[in-house]
Image (cartoon, rainbow, N blue to C red; front, side, top):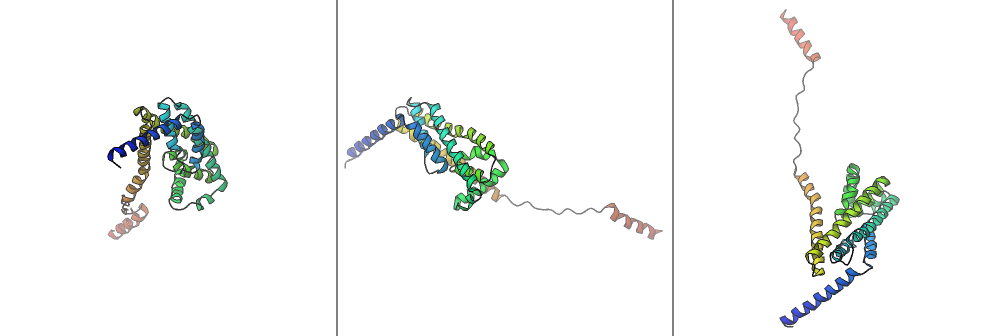
Length: 241
């Protein structure tokens, strides 16, 4: 195939993808799909609901969706999924730990230790780490973290994470208003970079803690009490006399 023919083929593929993206993002079913995928994503982080929310943000920038409604749909799905994960952890109890292997088991131990120290802060912020909220909700349930506090922090955190993804898409759609496909790619790239940066923070802290030298214990001489010194003085005085 000639270079001109290859270029023409790539243009056709790009036009087709732009058309499909436009149709998908303008679909009235998009909000329902967002709710469903956000529920599943809270339980199984392999489902890319964040990409769909970013896409809906791109559509909102083009006037095809309402940004606040997109955020509300994503937050609703996330809330339902996270509460379900908490309930599963509550029912299974400590046996949840035995079902995890490898990195997830280590993540469980870290989250359990953090929950014991910081509580709701973990429930609120773990959602911004890759796979963090799935482990956090299961651990919170298994540790019988107070239900009222869990619901309060989850109700606060889900709109924040939903707004973060939707606004990323909106920024991409506004930047590339004439090409929603580029806007989607821009939003996904920003989300990926932000996720990698957030995920690297705990690893850097762990490395710094490991490099820190152990504190040197300096023995302090024990001072003699008055009861120990007095007999020596008395005996010395008696000998002198």
